[in-house]
Each structure stands twice: as C-alpha cells, then as structure tokens.
Length: 222
Image 1 (tube, rainbow, N blue to C red):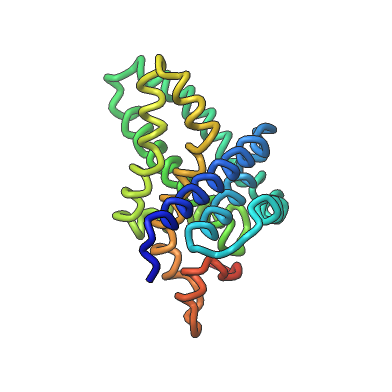
Image 2: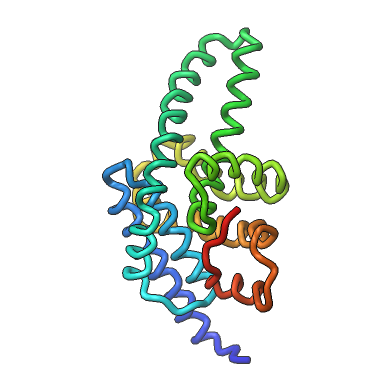
C-alpha cells in the first residue's frame, strides 16, 4: 500500500482537474438548454468512471456518452421541462394563496414527484435500456423504493442549489462555483449513492459487483 502523502496530493489534484474539465463540458453542451438531459447522462457516466478509478479519456468518453443518450435524454428533459415551467407558475399561485389547503397539498405532491424524478431519470437513462416514459415512471418508483438513499441524494444535490438561491448577493462566488465544479461535484455524490441503489436491478452474474466498482457494466433493461 502506497501511503505517500505526495502521491495522494497529486491524485487529488488530478481528480479535481478532471471534475473541472467535466463541469466545463457539461456547461458547454447544455447551452442549447434542450440538451441538458443528454449532458446529465454523459456527466453521470463520466463521473462514475472517474470515481471508480477506471482509466478513461475524459473528453472522448463524455462526448461518446452524450451522443448515445442524446435522443432519449432530450425527450426526457423536454417532458420534465414542461413540468418545471408549470411548477414555477404554480409556486407563484401557491405563494399568494397560502390558505388554500388543496393547492398546498397538490403542490407538495408535485414538488416531491418532480424533485425525485430529476434525481433518478438521467442516471437511469445512462445505466438502463428503456423508453423515456418508462424511465420517468421508474424514476419515482425507484426513489420511493429506496427512500433513505433518495433523501441522502436529495440533500446532496439540492442543498447547494438552495444555498445559491438563499444568498443572491454571493453571485460572484456561486457563479464560478457552478461554472467550474458545482455540477460535477454534485454528480460525484449522485454516482456514489446510486451505485448502491442500482446494484439491485442489475443482472446477477459472476463479477457483477466488481464491474460496478469499476463502472464498466453495460446497459440492461429495467
């Protein structure tokens, strides 16, 4: 075992450099807005490989995953984007009708469904083979079935977003945080947590767990 602090330092710097590169790739490929879904799939797969210690070509692997998930990723994102836009208007309505219990209950249900679905949809698309609508359905079912992991994923993913919105005066810091490493860092936590969730849905084969550790499993149906 090599415990040389200098090696650990350079390994950490290498990881940070790769995460910054992946973050920039994510930002650039997400600029058309409609491609955010494909970019999320590519970021998830790339981060999973990197955190599992598998050697990879960052740009080449990212773009390969982006192209492979482009059609389904765009489809899933467009569906969820419609709900996101509706939630923005619904939020404004609920804020001005706090005495409407029915609206508050419905809003809470839709908020939970949408936030949980966004956590799982693109990692599911990147890992398993299925139609976009089935991926969206499986997202909420998987989230509820593994609720403790989902809550951990919720906190890890949305806490930085909440802090960003809560401190608008710190925009000079938060802008560079999200530009350079924010998205890829959030995806690190996502990859580490979802590895424990998705193992239950992968084929039971010899060396399957080892393949998951290395991030080399192929897509399977779910």
